Image (tube, rainbow, N blue to C red; front, side, top):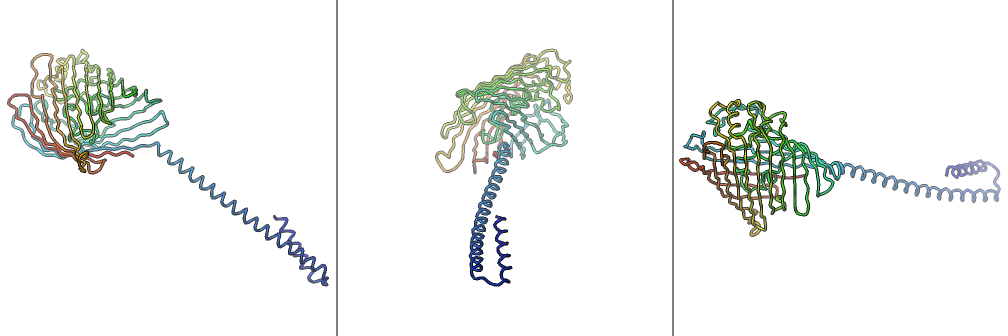
Length: 460
């Protein structure tokens, strides 16, 4: 192209120089013809150049669009590996309660409670590896408070570093799952003991509070550090775990071994490990299912003052659970049976635990029992109102049997209630419940409670 333009310039220069010479008609006509051909060629060359530039511009634009789309795909691909979930509940409770175990004249109190806010972060490394971190904020945060424990050991004040609640890591696990039939998870993991370990979001149980029967026997949404295998074969789901065990220094009459959960300490004693297993047929989160779970572990070796007791303090727990969800009908239930060996030796050793007055510590149960049944009807199957009406019964007896002597009936409780769940949108539930608590001990009057709650759950 440059050569053609140069020739054109030479021709124009030659024409200009010849204009000052004597005109020769033949030569002039030849020069004009030559120049016309050159101009025509120049127009063609300029048109060709413009077409090439247009093509190049379109290609550059296309390349830029491809690069932009690629960058966007890479960015979205990275963020698509992240997941975020959250759920929480806020409650209002008005109930009658006793100042201490000797009190037979209940007092009514009302209170608000930011029961819990839970955030869960996940990352999918690839098709086989992923991780989850779950952080729970209970009862509004942390700080320094003085609590009055009214219903235990004749009543006492306890100083704790919390402001009505706590912030804790409820789950921090890595998972490797090469197939649906087999996977491995390790870290801080949920134990599959108790239905609350599976159905712990507000829309997954009907009562305002999680079931009282389970709270009177097991740690809430029980989590320990360890390793486990899991998988799904046909419609069967299995789990088996080796985890950190409980600490019998903190076993209490009113909630059996639940307070032995070592969540309060910076480091967890692991001199005694525990074993947990579960087998479900069906899926409790999806609807109907049947399940059986078992826990076993020694507890004395995990005591901070392990020289106070030489026996093992073996804990075994059997959990049977079932659910039937079909159309508008909802029915769920669970039975828990637990045994504690050497319960008398642990009772005597715990009498000198810091914060407890010697002689005021009541006995621990060598056997504990609890169950609940909840039944509901989803009226959205019949009307346009997204509402579920339910009835519920909870029962707990952490002193079903004792090693020696006679077990007190003061901690054997039955709660019966009726209530409603209303779903303004799928992610939010508003609950109301009214009920009665009965104590098995003669001379202790029944008490009544009313509760309102609002819960949410979502995932990104």
